[in-house]
Image 1 (tube, rainbow, N blue to C red):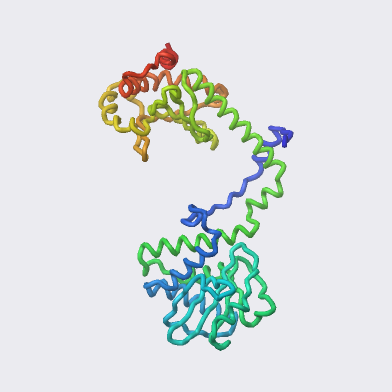
Image 2: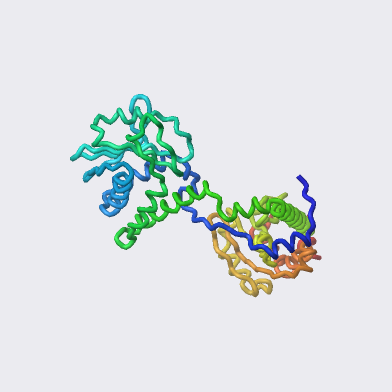
Length: 374
């Protein structure tokens, strides 16, 4: 889709409107992409209830019992509670069954994140062979949900947020170990984020109110990305090397023919975030990292080293030398020329020296003079 753009009109619009950005806390489940998995969510609730830590167990169990009492009128006692997950009824699986060994009271939990309710709740209810006064069913959902007619009066609806918010009001981090402080804080954030996904926040509202302008702005971003991409290809060509990688935030420039593990990296992340700056890095990868200390000793007095930072080793690669450059808007228009000039002035000789040291028998004559700007 091509969108006609009036750049001045677009500039005026964003000058007059502050774009709302909803800040979100990312937890462990978001990192591994499991926040929507009901079985994992159930296992976490069960773990807290089964915890050998009294503070943790009571925090989750007492708040649930309070909500059960409030919504069903049943004051159940579960002094020695134990939570089981994926309990097989013969016809289905109950997500969580919380039982008490002393009072024979039960809470039957059907946990729903995104899936529709197709489960036979009456089967779950009948599976627990206790009197109605000693058991209660809980339909645990992200947003309020009606109780199916066959189990009305037997099941109640509690939202994840209702439970987690009540937990939050009773949560005292100072009495818990660091491990459980992190676990519980992280889980609270996950539930809050899942719940927010159902609601229209200010960012979503802004988009729908200004979709045309936002799409136009997105089109300008595409143009900017293509500009950066093309400039990086020109830079590589002008020093006799090739580009490697497809991230818009960085690109490697290397001798692809010889597949050298010593190369330059151009960080363009700052440019793409609206900061007039970029970084050049002399980088070592894989087996070349073992030469880092020798190179530091060899290059320590080299003129091109004096205004640079020695970088860290990160996993299998190392930022040997780094330098950040500020750039004006006029220089940005000719980004390739500016970067090539800085490579020649600041990095070409030390990079050449490093490659000659690590690869003394490799033929680099095809790009050597061009790389050095001679």
